[in-house]
Length: 631
Image 1 (cartoon, one colour):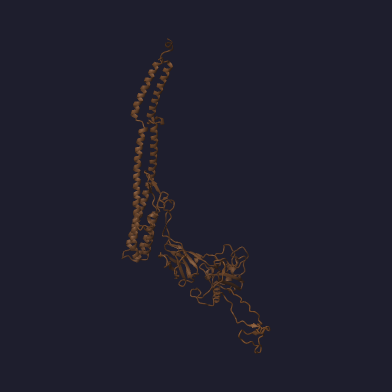
Image 2: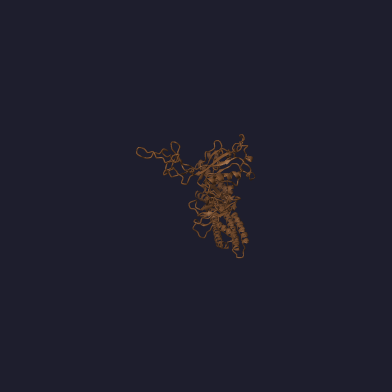
């Protein structure tokens, strides 16, 4: 077979390229330590390396997350350990308070100590890890616990219409004549207007009438109480000549006393010269007319109003009334030194013509009247006022609820009066059922004997003197927990290396609150509240009973602490398995893509020798010149 020079040349070129490529690959591999530099080097090995690399990266990320989770768990476990130690201190104080030889004063001091330790317990439960609260569930930016003050101001409600003066009368002026000190120089509503005239002598009309009552169809129901009646005098009828006509059954006589024969009609019936009887004129509530001169003092004015309503009530005695008599309205100077007009229960106020200008001068307004509306007696005032729930100034009674309870309480004045004669009723189910009437004192235990157990909540009135409590006045207690939880119950779970998830966080609620249906859990703060109250009241038996509840609370904390420890062990085990997985997959990946440097050096020498030999052989094969070729 004839081999031409072109064939020789192509063969030489092919062999040299192959040797140069092999030499190049070995040189690149030795320089970067990798024998797998592109997928074509080992397609199967490249796929395996990609899988190994993905698995290793996932394990490293999971290992990093578990490290952070472990820090959180260690912080939680440390806080729970401190909580457990704090509970132990409280138990030691309870054991001390349950000892027979401890005096009342010492128990009071122990109660203060337990209250202080409880505050420390709340601070420990509000622990932060960085900016996040540890025991708040997933609401980690909110403080989980709040310790409330045991004294909460009560809400006041009064379903009635009252009138109050806009002018406050300083005690130093209450015995001076009204025209000597009233701010008559300016209008209380419009100070830029010209000065007002002083109070003029005249009559002020005030009326207290029953509130309108409507049936289910919206129709007005006639009042059932006896309305004011006009005095009934013996009616004397006159004949056509002006002579009196005797009443029925009495003989008719003339001016000289002689009997007069009755006139008869065609049928023989007597003719009534007075004509048919007129229908009776109904009388509604009559206003009380108070004569005012402007020279009365505020005290005298209030007395005049009260005396007028006492007289209108026919001087009927009433031990529950602050005046001692049954009245439809009570005037008083309130704690804020303003005049109040309080109608009786189920009554409302109306005012007749004011000849005196008093209503305008003192700026009387209905409580509940819209702000900015004119005072009663001024141009454009409201004709009466709509029946609304009016606000009662807090300073008039200064009610304070003392104690802790999750139940709301509603206290309603059932019979008006002051301390000792007023009566109240209590509801602990939002007004559905009420307790029997109880005497209203300056301090009252709020308790419905027919309802749930007492929570030892007391209602106190801090206003000085003896305020008058109107019938229908209500004091509302909306609940006041010793310690409130503001977090949530959500549990954050983190995945482990085997795909199983483990709870990471612990909430204050599962740590210190009772779990429904689990008798081995208690509300720790309710237990501590009862302990503090028992120590304050020198109740040794209750203090002794609370020790068992404190033990239950401690066991509840210890149980959670053990669970946290178990979670920590699971995280450590998972971290160890992840480290082993990373090492194993890394070794497998290294076997596929990493170069053996010793073997690579030998292979490089072989490839270099092979390349040199190929060059020498090629030079001999294509060495003949053109002259030799022509021969």
